[in-house]
Image: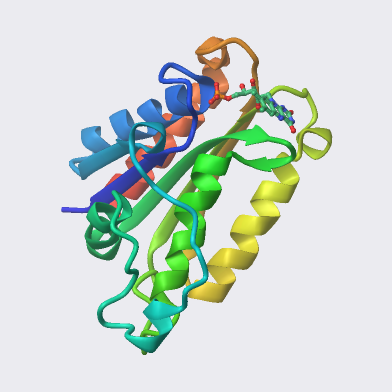
Length: 188
Ligand SMILES: Cc1cc2nc3c(=O)[nH]c(=O)nc-3n(C[C@H](O)[C@H](O)[C@H](O)COP(=O)(O)O)c2cc1C
């Protein structure tokens, strides 16, 4: 059974990226996956402070005692990680970026635990154009990050909407999100 970790980086509980993420979850669960989801806004995830303690003692890892400590084992166990974020100021939200920066804690390990994992990307943005919105910047960031840690981008679901949940009107996109979940859920 595939284990999937879903992380939502919008401060809006019923926002557009979370709406798409819930579709991914529905598809993954239908495919028989075990899914755990987390809303970063409800968690205490502090920014990396560059203390480099994780590099000095890689097995101990990050020394910041916050809710990321609960996520590190979830990241390690997951076959796939889905990260849903709004586009804020031409890239992912601060909540999402803080979560991603904390992957630095894996740097000192002989093998990065992210290696070989599948990554599902979900983005929502206000501008109608993915280039003007900054969504392309975010996608490029994920490309570079995945190449660096050895993870694979399984798929990206992204679209434009403003009011919370408005994206649900885009049936084709909602279907694409569901199918990404199914694909991740079957490990395909
Ligand atoms: C602080 C802030 C910054 C934003 N920056 C951008 C941006 O750079 N490009 C864009 O297209 N939309 C931007 N938006 C609009 C959001 O991306 C849009 O409303 C999106 O649907 C929010 O997703 P969510 O509902 O998942 O939170 C911004 C919104 C906020 C609140």
